[in-house]
Image (cartoon, rainbow, N blue to C red):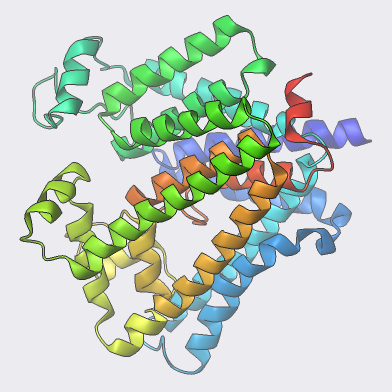
Amino acid sequence: MYQKNNVINILLVMLFVIGSVLSYSQWSGIGSGLRLVSEFLIIICNIWNVNFKNYTIILPLVGIFCIYPILMTSVGVYGEFSKQVILYSVYYAFYSLFLICSINAFRDNPMSLVTTIFWTLTTMLFLMMFIFKGVSYNVLELINSMLYNQRYGNNILTQRISMGFNNVNTLGMFAGFLVLIAVITHKNRSNLKNILIVLFSIFIILNSGSRTPILAVGISLVVYLVHSLGSKKIKFIVSTITGFFLTTIWAVFLYFVYFSNSLNTHFMQLDEFLSYRLNYSQMALSLAGSDLHKWLGIGSMSTSFIQQKLTGERFAIDSSLAYFLLTIGIVGFSFLLIYILYLYCMIVKKQSSIVLTLFVFYSVYLVMENILFIPNAAVSTFILTIIFAYMLSNKRVEEYNDR
C-alpha cells in the first residue's frame, strides 16, 4: 500500500510541476488548472494520514497570512479591498494544507521528492526550448550582454529569450534552481548527467539574460562547498556567518528603499544593477498612503491584482521585502521576520548542507523577486516542500545522498 501511494504521489508531483511551468507560459490557463487539480488530489490522497501535531512549524504562516489579514479586515483596516484579502486568506489556508500533505507524503524519503521535481522540471525546460526554439548559441555574446546590461533590443545577439515563458526572469529562476539541485544532490546521479544538466541550465540562464540566478546560485554554492566539507563546529560557524550575511543584504536593500534619495549616486548605481527594483519598491510602498496602512498594511493580495488595480500596470513589485511591507505592513513584516529567524535557527540545528543551501538561494532570490511564501510562485513551493520534508524527517539529510 505504501509503494502504491508513493507512486501516486510522485505522479501528482509531476503533474504539479508540469502545471506550474505551463502556468507561466501562453498556456497559463491549462497550467493553472493542472496545478490546482494536482493540489486538490495531493490533499485528498494524503490528508487522512496527516498528524497535524507534527506540522506546528507551518502554523505561523497560517497566522501571518490567514488569521492576521482576516482580523485586520474584521476591524475595518482593509475595508477597500476586503473581499480580495479574504479570498487570498482562504486560498492561503488551502495552500498551507497542500504543503502539509505534500511534506507528509515525502518526509520518509525526501530525495524521492527532489528527484521527481528535478527530472520533471528538466524535461519541461528541454521541451519548451525544443518547441519555441530561437535560442542563441553565441555564448560569449550572451555573457557580454549580461555583464554590460545590453540585454534588450531587437538584435538577436543581445535580446533575451523567453522560450515561451511570459517572463524571462521566471525561466532564469527555474534554470538556476536546476543548477543548484544538480550540484547539491550530485551523489544521486552520474557525473555525466550532472555536468550535462548544469551546462544545459547555464545555457538557458544566459539566454534568459537574468542575472539574479547567477548571483543566487553563486552565493549558495559557496556556502554549500564550505559547509559540506566542514566539521560540526565549522558548520555552525558557516551557518552563523551566512545568517549575518543574508541579514546584511536585506538590511542594505531596505535602507536604500526607506532612507535613501533616488537621486543619490549610490542609490542610482545599485538601482541600475538591480534593474530599478529599488525605485519600484519605493513606488510600491508609497501606495500604502496613510500611516495606519504603513504599519498594518493594505491587505494580502496577489501581485497581479495589485499591479492591475493599484499600480496601473506601470510597474511590478518584484521584491518580496517590498511586497510584504506593503501588504501586511511593518507589524506583519516584523512577525514574519521573527518566524524566518526561528526557521533559520531550526535549519542551523539540523546541520544539513542541502537545506541550508536551498534556504540561502531562497533568501537571496526573494530580494529581487516576489517569491517568499507566495502560493503561486512555483520555485518557492518546490523549495519549501523540500526544506520542510528534510527538516521533519527522522533521518539526517546526508543519509539520502549515500544511496
